Amino acid sequence: MLELAEWDSFYLIVGSAAGALIGLQFVVMTLLVAKPKPPAEEAGAAFATPTIIHFSTAFVISALVRAPWKSLVPVAVICGIIGVIGVVYTTVVTRRMRIQNAYKPVFEDWLFHALLPFIAYALLALSTFTASSYTRPALFAVGASTLLLLLIGIHNSWDAVTYNVFVNTGKDEDSDESKQT
Image (cartoon, rainbow, N blue to C red; front, side):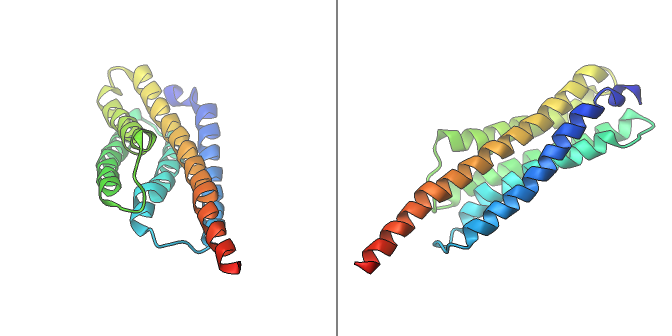
């Protein structure tokens, strides 16, 4: 399809970045687990897992759009389904953020873990309805939502790493020093 062919390089870049960042996120989490911390499963479900979901969604959409489709309809429908599932998932994540007690979310957390993902997935879902009438704007909406999910994932990964390195590591070092003296 000519419409999707023009997006080939964009999705090649976004998909490759998402795939690489998924792997890097797993490496970082593995390294962080090496230093035991108090259990915070609720916080992981609210903050860590969604990051992998956003990267994976960007990766799947990139692969989906690069497939040799005969028509735009199946791509639009699948993107719409992914968008609806993402909206529901973001609602679940928002609820998890509210009920977890390991960390008190600040404005930036609500923005990058609740509001922006909701916008990205809603834009993806809504693009389905405009794909046949307004193909070019719909493709830009899918591209924008995919790129937004990638950028949200990058932000949230960095946020998680810096929190664990500077906040959790600092607390652990203080307690280790006090035990030695």
